Every structure is written in C-alpha cells, then in structure tokens.
Length: 324
Image (tube, rainbow, N blue to C red):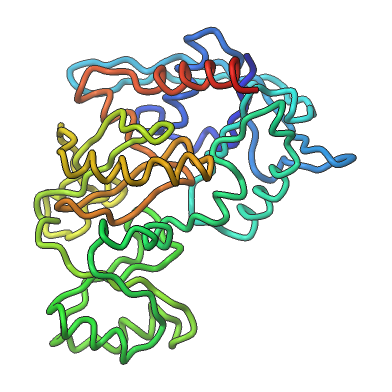
C-alpha cells in the first residue's frame, strides 16, 4: 500500500522522539511505500487534491541501553513527483500545532481527497472542529471545573472561587503559554491582559489539580481504543509536565477511571473520524484531547517493549482493505 505523511520538514524531526517517524518506520517495515510532503505542497487541480510527494526510505532507530539511537543520516528522500492524493491508500495529516491559517487551508485542500478511495487521518473537517482545548468541553463530567472567557472579572472570580487555577491559550501546544493564577499574585491583571490580548481573545481557565504533581498522563487511542500510555512528570520546579518543556517520562498503567473516560469518548471520536488521538489526563480528569499530531509512541514503546506504530499501521491496512 501507499501511505502519505504530511509532516513538518523532515530534517527538523527527532527520530528518537517523533511519533510520525515511528509510524513511517512501521509502515516501511510492514512492506508499504512511504511518501512525505508538507502542507505548502498541497494543491487542488480539477477538483482533486494533489501533492508534491517524495518517496522516503528510513534507517530505523535502535533501542540501546534504554534509549533510542539513530544513525546519521537516518533518512533518504527521493525526487518528488506531483500526484493526486487519491492514489494513496491513506494520508496522515501530521503537521504539528498550532493550528494556523496555513494549517486550516491544508485541511480545506484535504477535503478534496475522495473518501471512497483514500482515508485521511484525522478527518480534515474534524481537525477544524476539534480544538484540542475546547473539544473536551462536551464531556463536562470528565473534565475539571472549566470556563472559557476573555473577561478579566470572570477570570478573577473563578480563581477566587477555586483558590488557584490554570490559564491556557486555546491555540497553544506543548505547554506553551500555560500559567498558574493565584488571587494574591501582583502580576494577576497583567497576566490576563497578555493572555487575552487585552480582553479580545478568549482563554481557558481550569481548576488547578493538585494531582498534577504526580504527572500528566498521555493515553494513545486508536479508533477509540486505548493502546498505550505514558506518564509525564516534571523533575524540576516547572509546574508543566510536558516533554517539550523538559518533563520526564515514566511507565504507567491505564486505570479503571481512565478506561471509563476512553469508553465515553470512543463513540464521539469514531463518529467524527478522529482515529488517532492522544488524551491528557490528570488525577482522573480529562484535560485535553489532542487530534492534530499526538505524540508519545516512542516513549511508550521504549518503556513497555512494544511497537505501537506497527499496531497503528496494521489497523490502518485492515481498515483500507475492508472499508474502502
């Protein structure tokens, strides 16, 4: 089969960490042809989505002494060709957030891939609708107490009620721009003004969860089913546990409560064709639903001696074979 991956420039990717690389390696190992392209290389011609696609050949990373090791160079890219994306069996939209105008335009182009011929993961329309912060609000019993607002007075009342809160930009990624708010902070007004751009941009304000000190769990879902998890823990005074800001990772299990969360989300995710998803859970509460470019496979594989990329590609191959 032919699988296309829309990714950021490949020389910017870390093969020892990146989930897209893990899935591309798995596709290659299982005998499929891997093609890569970038969002700016997508086009619409005669009502069909086309792309400048380059065949990719990877030298897989190896696990040595509890860490991944890559050779250099770890990839080879052949000359690109312009092809209709419907000639691919599946297309992975794996450009990292934030969701910018160029990202949105790429999803509009992907709307012109014939769904009867090619599966796009995740569904372009769903990517536009499922803001990774806002999407979780439709599950109020699973999330901490949360408000979305640009109003300083509303935010202040929320923080005073809960004693401490987390403020998140709606379009952020990897922990960027997340702040702790406390009533006595002399910077309180300035923090809100900066985050809301003087009351013109809504932000998410969420009840602070003391359990965050024990970690922020990433759970990987494939077609609604949890296939693995990793716990991210800050080893410094940094309150954010994200790997991108230095958070460490540790082996973990999926609890009964977390399984319940996955079960409640599964029908909605499947209905919206969000097949590859990363949930963030703190202390039994759902905090985010990551749909654009969920990561964590390399860490789960290393800690649990599994190969989730191969599980994803095997599922995808069956889906394409029997559903398209």
